[in-house]
Length: 130
Image (tube, rainbow, N blue to C red; front, top):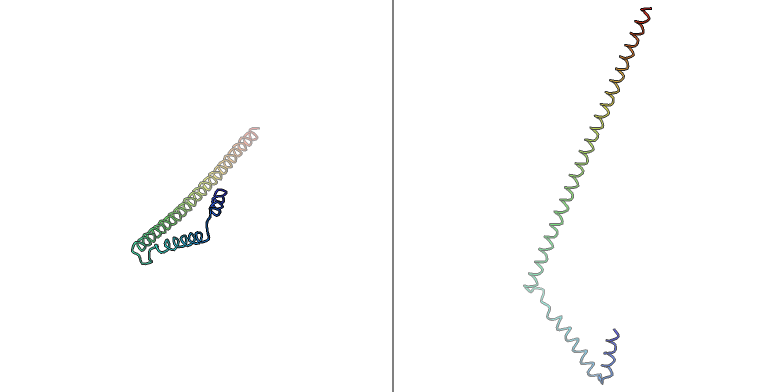
């Protein structure tokens, strides 16, 4: 910014007269107006084609976004189904383990009863022999 300020100061003191500054300002405004006027009209075929192309690109983008959303939703549903199946399998496995544990406990209880009954028979036979 310092360089621009120096240049500006030097141009001011180089003998720039009011008329010259006024002309420079008018030229700048004319250039801006010319730039504005060179813009194509709203019904220009090139402009309409460019707008149609932009619309087509935007629509394609929206379609791709919708497809991605559907895919994410389908993946979420599939993941939920897999989790539910895994939970059901885990519950079934737990139920199998519980059933096996109960059966093992029942078998052990029967074995103990049989062992007690055999012990009692041996004790009774020993008492009967005396």
